[in-house]
Structures are given as structure tokens and as C-alpha cells.
Length: 618
Image 1 (cartoon, rainbow, N blue to C red):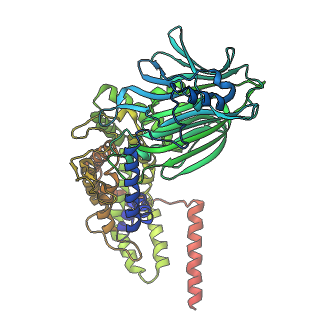
Image 2 (image 1 turned 180 degrees about the horizontal axis):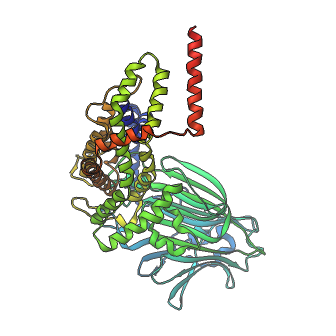
């Protein structure tokens, strides 16, 4: 009987992980009425999205000015006061290098289009981070004549020049020939980072000295096949308070007020829009609105981000050196900007798990994938990881073998002390101590593998090196594979609107692995859950959980469990010998055992409890 209890311990850590996940899903499941309401709301949002070709962010954009209408132009100049010196003019100016194309509008002097030149979405459309009014940028300030203005409503005068190989664009909102507010963009060749300077000249006494508020908003454009999956890794991340990294909520609306902010990252899974400074923003109000309520094949946005940052004037003038980053959320790229620490915006995981992911798995896989196709690189990495963990597997199997050898003696103790549970436990612990067997050694290996498990769990969904890399029937190892797509409008709760093959294979392999480690004849222990039922349920849970996850992760678990099965078979057939183990245990029994303080304390407590029990009976 005791052997089976150890078998249960050996899988208890594994059971808890997925048991907690299923419990969370169950507790947060929507009612039928909520599902119907969510569906109706989503249909309304999608219909509004189709009708409105120019998506709005938090604030309504001002009505466009007809530059041919002299009355409207005059009214505009009268509204903005001194800044009406700059003549209204349509047009955009393009900054472009080998990696990214930026278009800056005369209206607001802001970036109105940011396109990646080397990347496309899942349906082969160029990746845009800014397009068709999904972003807004402006400075909100007051003037000495009691006007409250925002630069997104002002017209800027563009001027292009070269600084060596760099392209420099100056956008000036003038109040006089030598008095202006300037946005200066400098783009370098083969670089995603753009220097962005905000400065004023001669505006002391025109702009009030109270803090100027920088306002930046963006709606994340969908890039991936599954909008829910993409949205899970789409978050507002920021560096603040001496390089502390924080995030707003992934699944719900969230807002925070922070101080000493170094950079703001509007992450859209595999791509990021980042505003950074070498100094710090003294105060920032941040918000994130979740736009995704359910899976949709047509809805175009994931989250809506907004930030309000205070800029301080110095001597009545404004001078702020900033940086724009529009590019991939790729550690190899972001590591180039170590001074700003932009690589910390990637969700590697927390603590030791994130360290393993960032400094072990990520560079190791990058090296393998530079030599091999992406899928083969995953298989090779899996084999090497399992071989590295094989000593732990050996220890686990050795513990099970020792418990198997001790089974007759444990059973005998159970019969001898069946009416005295305390004595039975005391004698069992003595037997373990004499034989040199630890009852916890069966579950310790499972906990030792937890950092590897979690690090890989974060690696596959967020590794840019896997994006749009195909293997066998999987088109994209960073997303789910599809062997069958359900009809439009049909979806299985918690499973999805498609069938993925890699999760099925992984679940089958996990089932056989658990059959080997738990045994065919698992008894039901009094007061314990039906572990045999859980053994059958867990692969089913895995099938549901991983159906919408990265196919690279399911491929890893499939190969990993196959390798583990083969290693355990090899250990059983060629390495471990029950007779030798039995002989070693008998030798261990003859050796004098010295109790440590913990063992002695436990023995004394059990003896006292036993004595108290006897005294009570008298």
C-alpha cells in the first residue's frame, strides 16, 4: 500500500499545476446569459469597427480643416492664438531606412504611420504598428493668454536635412520666425530606434511654466491568427523607480500612476511601440483597456493604451531628449539598446524562471536555429534538455524501485499495526531510515524540474525566433497548428474553433508516461481523490489547455515525454536490478544509523503521542 502512496506523491506537483488552472477556469466561467451578452456586445463592436474606417482613441479628433475655406482657416488661427503664425498645410513627410518606414504629419507633427519593412501578419499583410488613426500623440499646455492647446491640433512646418547618413526631420509650430515649438526626429540607417527631441525657442512668457502634459495613445492592431492568444501577450510594460519592471493587467482594464518612469512599452505580442528617455518622467498616468472579449476572425484590435506624462520646463523653455522604438519584441534587437534596458520589456518570466529563459533557452535556441530548421532545433533542444535532466529521472525511478522492494515489509507493518495508525507510521519511518529510503524522494524530482517547465512555458509563446517558422503541418511554431477548422461561428468552450494535432500527440505521450509512473492498478486511498481518474483526466486537460497555445510548446512536450519514456524503459531494463537494490537495502539495514536533530525530534514527538494515547486508555 505504501508503494502506491509514493506513486501519488511523485505526481502530486504535476496534478496541482493543472488542477489549479482548471479550478480557475471553472470559477471564472461565464454564465449562459453572460456569454450571450458578450456575444451581442462583440458583434456591436465589430460592426462599429467596420463602419468606422478611422478608429478613434480616447479623445475625439478635431474636425478636419478645409484649407480652401478661408473662413475656417481664420477661425482656426483665432482659436490657437499665437501659434496661428504657422500656416495650415496638408501633407506627410516620410522617414525610411532598411527596417522601418515612418510617416509624420504636418497636423500635430506626429507619427501617423509606422510600418515594418521585413515582417508581415499571419495573412501576409505588412505589419503596421501605427495606421489609419489608431495612435495619437500631443503636448497639452496652457498659454499666457489663457488658451489650453494640444499640439495634435496644431500645424507644424516640416524641414528635412541629412546629418551624415542620418535623416533629420524638423517639425516646427511657430509663433514667429525665430520662436517655435520643435519636434526633431533623427533616423539612423539599419536602426529601429529614432532619436526624438522636443524643444522650444523663444516661448518663455508664451507657454505657461506649469508642467506640460505629454499624451500618447495607441490601439494595438491585430497581427496574429488568434486574437485571444495575441492579446494574452499584449501588455503595457514600463520601467520605473530605479529599473523596476511592471505591467498593467493582461486580461482586464487597468490603470496606474507611477513616478520616475524611464520607458513605456506598448507591447503587441511580437512587436512593440516604445517611448523612452535617458532621464526619467517624474510622473506618469497609465491605462490599458482590454478590447477582446472572445475569439474573433475579423476583429482588428487587441488593447487600447493611454499615457499621460509630465514634462517640466527649465527657464521658461522646454527641452526633452526622447526615443521612439517601433520594431520587433526580439531580444537580439532590443539588446542593442542596453543603455535604455529595452530588452526588459520582453516577458521572460519572473525570478529564476525568467533568468533560465533569457540566459539559457533563448540564446541556446537562437544558436541551434541558426544551424538547423526551427522545428528540428526544437527537437534537438528537447533531447538535450531531457538528457541533462536524466539524472533527476534516474533518481525518481530509483526511489520507486526501492519502494517496490520494501512493499512486502511495509504491507506486513500495515497488517501488524492496522489498529494503531500512530505506531504503524512510527515503525514505517524506522524502516525507511534503516533502509536508507526517503519517502519524499519520489516527488522531489518533480519540483526540481519546475523551473525548467515554467521557463519553457514562457519561452515558446514569446520567442520571436519562432515567429512564422513552419514545421511539418504547423505553419507557425509561435501559434497553434490547425488540422481542422470548425465552421464560422462554431466553437467548443475552453477548446476553441479548431483542432490542433501537436496537443493531441503531447496528451497521448503524457498519458503513457503517467501509466508508467503510476502503475496500472492504482488503489483508491481513503480520504484521497481518485488518482486513477486524475491520471486519465490530466492528458484531457492538457489537450484543452494547449489547443490554443504555441505549437512549438506542444511539440516540446510531445518529444520530451517520448524521450522520458524511453529513458525510463532503458533505466528499468539495463540499469536498475531489483535483486541488487534489495541486497543493498539489506546492507543498509545492518549499518548503524545516526539520527539528525529533525529525525530525533520527530521520533520523540511520536513516542510522546503514543505514550499519551496509552495513558489515556488507562
